[in-house]
Image (cartoon, rainbow, N blue to C red; front, side, top):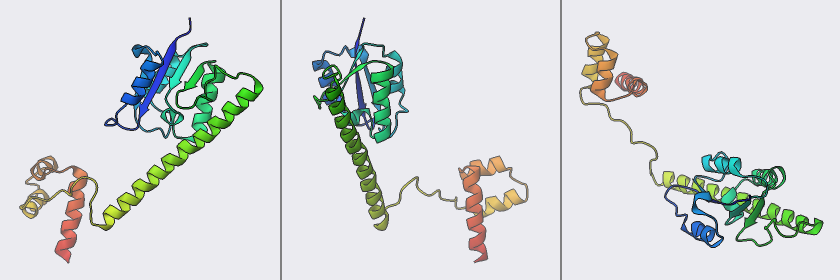
Length: 202
């Protein structure tokens, strides 16, 4: 017996999936058959999407709100659509685009129109992802130009760093004891040690 499923995706954990969930409820998708991922659409390496694909059987029906909820990679969207509709023989309904309802227009003209619409929407989805990435890069560059620093704050050396280093060099302190006293990883310590010695030379 065929089943009805829904797929919901938001780009990050703090984004809200309510609108998509409301549309799934309106479409009559059972809550236990809705698969949700909270991560980027740049590829299909998503745990719940993979679980959904494994669950889908011939004759099942899959609802998605819009093509960009499936993904934002042009070629991958085309490939996944082929896997679902051709290899798994599943019907797909894109709620925001009535032309993308594989239950309708299964003749040559209907298939041609659906394929054309899918290509256009897939192109738009990837273009939007690239614009988002470009805006992020521009924002980061502008912030750096204003002096905003990214990443973890720079680790400060303790006031008695010089004395600790000398004690370590005299083998009065083991490396592990030294790292603990400095509250640093080994890599950070050696970097700070290089900076310290260069400063002393200067």
